[in-house]
Length: 537
Image 1 (spheres, one colour):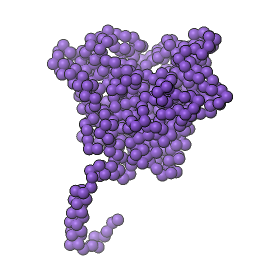
Image 2 (spheres, rainbow, N blue to C red):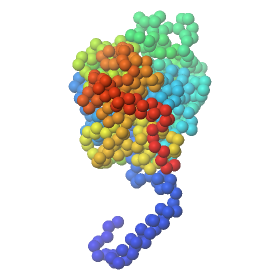
Image 3 (cartoon, rainbow, N blue to C red):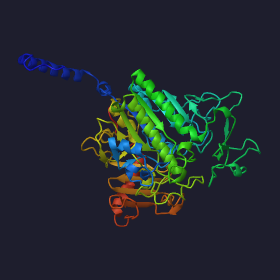
Image 4 (cartoon, helix red, strand yellow):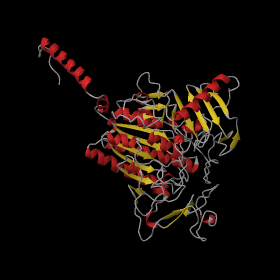
């Protein structure tokens, strides 16, 4: 409310201010600190996290790609902040997704490597997640897309019954999922706790052994495949593509690979519209499958890039981003929605199928200027595209602040005023100022990187210094062009990322004391069990 000059008595105004200040002091003295911290700020944004799959730093044109154009992803960057030191926490999907949701490094929990088809739920009920924290703050939460974090109790999923525990037991109000990843069986959707469209007369069976001697596989029926395999990926065939694992039944529930993106975009549009109608803040985790194998996109994208099916998948991903942002605009939500775009790990070309990813790659650098890629603790494995966009709140620009997907749990909780329990989100740091591009924000001061299972392969970045530790003295996928090649390396390597972003020149011999200090610090970070400071509960 505005008052015209001279409309109030100045002496009364001074007295009122003094009374008000004294009341504030009294309130502060008698009110528990947790209550004050829990009070959410006005104007809490809707939150949409779009996580790509196997997308490298150099796979988007806003990061310098020239062989392919990603106009919708670029538009996010053009309206927000593009991070040059944005990371995921691991170089494969399951551990990054675990860390993103829980805010805790995956190497701290056994069994967070790439989840098999019948994996039980990796995140158990009672675990605080980014979804449960936002749910407590009054948000309606949904995950749509690839899950790959297991479903069900200790015995694994009951594919013909209730699939619990799952997302709904750890903070999501709803879910519409691919339960594993699409090169693993089964090719069905899970809606909330059930396989969608499952016919009880045709039960779904999933196993790790052939159900019968005559069960067709990518080996026995290889001549029937529409996409051949290069290694592994040669068990049960669905839609002319052989996968990892075996399954039978569930015929009416199975989807076409070509329709994945369309189904998830349609579900997301419905969710956004429902929340706009309900006038409630929402959190949407849109977990895309592009550009993970098998790269079989909708017909309208096939052959549209010069990079073959992998490039076509990037175009489909860009379309997904465009559809989501158009929906937000159509619903009048753009200026009240924070969109985060990221990837679950770095790129890989030949990852089990003969899809011309190597042959048609040309001069395209999927990892940009960085070495490594998926499965690697070199920069290309975890330094990925990272964009934040909230028009009217986040300024337009490029940031070199160090941020990671593991930090979203704490940072978004801070943003909405939701306090964290002391024993939750053990490695998620508050980098909200950096995500919002506030002046002087620098993000993290360090980051631990891991490969798939965290079995002795780690990276530690502190400033521009990067220590790499390979306990097996082998580096997998050293360069993106050398697909899945194991290269002998020393146990420890030290790189100056400022002068050598491609990690070509090991300077351990020149800086032995620094290498030793960083090695000790890395081990301490692992042994301590947490890196987030304990705050006020």
